[in-house]
Image (cartoon, rainbow, N blue to C red; front, side, top):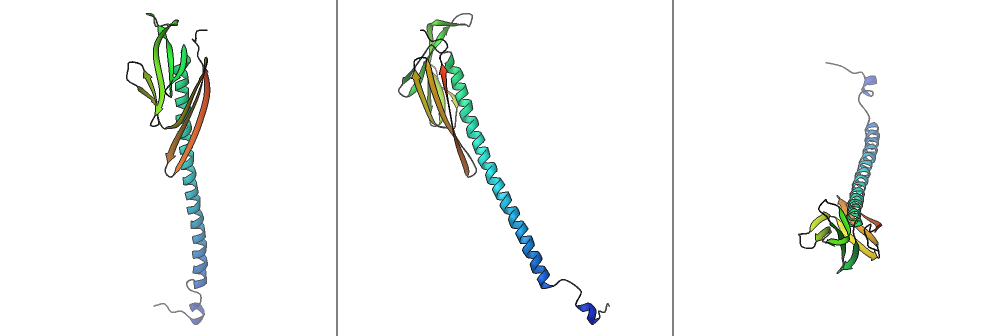
Length: 170
């Protein structure tokens, strides 16, 4: 059995004041870590949503621009962009003096479609919330808006460009 003298009794263990100070410091450090973690998580979700919206709008716009660039003529029909493509000869080359297939481009329920006349429509992109197509002679102005959500964060992006029809008959 260990015996403590009166002088040693006051020295063993920690005092209540030391425990309270240590607990307060530990609580402060843990609170700061939780706040940092929460902030980082929200920023990651916001950045991810923005990246997804940017990618969706940009890729959809690029694909649409590439598809209509070879057109002969463009017009607006019932809110859809209608593009007449040049005819394709037996060698697979364009004959810009003959009309070929006509494609309609429209957005329905957030999906961009290409609808070749006489064939089923093809989805080109999704996640779109708004669009605008304007035809002025051989120039077609395109604007697409996409929205994406990651967790509780959402982001929206609009991209616009103009395309000149390469095969337009003057």
